[in-house]
Every structure is written in C-alpha cells, then in structure tokens.
Length: 256
Image 1 (cartoon, rainbow, N blue to C red):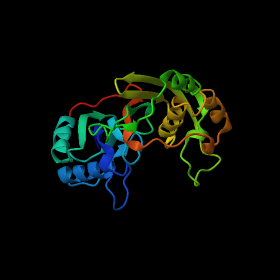
Image 2: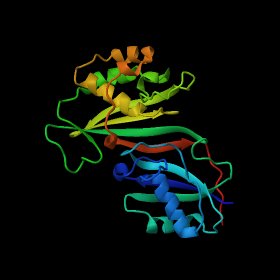
Image 3: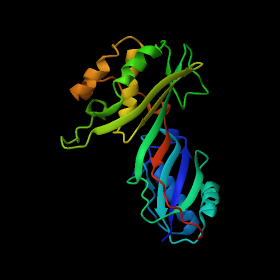
C-alpha cells in the first residue's frame, strides 16, 4: 500500500495533544477522521512525536498507509478541504514503505516564546507565556550552556509515578539559544530526542535563572542530581511549538 508522509501545521489550543484519546479532541483523531471521510477507510496516522495538550506545531511529521489511489498532491488538497481551520497539511509526498514518522526521526527542534513586558498581549495569549518581570538573557544563556551535549535529563522529565528506573532518559541537546525580539524572548532547542515535558521544564527553570531566583551554575547541579523536584516549574504549553523534525534522506515514491 502507498505510504504517504504529511507535514502538518496546527494551533494546539483546542486539542488534548497529538495522541488519540477517548472522548476528547486530538490532532491524530482529527486527521484520521478526515482521511476516513475522503477514502472511506480506517487508517492509523503515525506522528513523529506526541505534542502535549495546548502545544502547537509548525512542521509536525506523520505518515499513513492507504489503499486509496490518490496522489500526494490530491491528498493534501482533500485533507485541507475537510480538516478544521486550526490544522493544515503543508506538504504531502509518497515515501518508501520503510519510512516511519517516529522511528525514522533523527532529531527535533522546538521554539518557546515568552511575552516579556508588564502588560499581557491579547494577540499572543495563545502562543506565548506572559511574564511581566524582566528576564536577564545573559544569565539564562550561561545556564543553558550547561545543558548542551549528551546528558541524563531525568531532572527535566515529567513527574510521572509510572516512570521506571530502566527508562531511557539520555538525550543529546545540540542547541539551546535564547534571543530577544522586541517584547518577545525566544528559546530555540534542538536535540536527538526529548522526554515528556522536557522542554517546558527546562524553560521553567531557565526563567527562574533569568529572574535571579537561581544562579546559572545550578543548571549543572540539577542535571547531575537527576531529581525532578530540584528543577523549576513546568512552563505553560501555549508557548511551545514543534518547528522541525529531522530525518536522513528519504526515498520518495512518485506516481500513484
């Protein structure tokens, strides 16, 4: 069966994350329902990662196998015609059968936005975390530098009692850049993999550094301690966007 790869942009405000769940709206369910409307078949859409409730995506990647004979361009047009306005397919292509959006991925990039000014912004309320206290970027950059490289990121994963000691918590963070654009503070993080809530927990801790509540060098001690309770709060979801998923060269399949 043809294997179709999708690139998806979405505003996650109204959704309980990517993964299909009973009785609540999710991105995966919306796309699978749209495919069923078009081709009258039930398929499983595989996502590159499970974005959390309220988190957005600029370039989420997914794939599905189908019996339908539509070419990728037709899939893109048809899906965009039936999907809700807060989800869009920005690209569709046929790929070889071995491509798997999750297991073929080699890295991801996230962006987190903070609206850093005294007054909140109605225009940015769904896509940025409002903080009225000034953030000192040099302090946050010094703290972020301790996170670069391969580390055990247990201290920044979700505080989940279901975690098992044998869970793989090793990740390689290759980028953690922080810059200001007017009232917006932008965090750009890139790595080979990310644990649940890892980006949001890193941001919550770096914000404490930026406000002077922690010293930059504490980031190193938090990593070494592998204890979630030593890190900062989880930043709210609306500021987070999955901006890219990296893959090795993928063999494309042309035609139907």
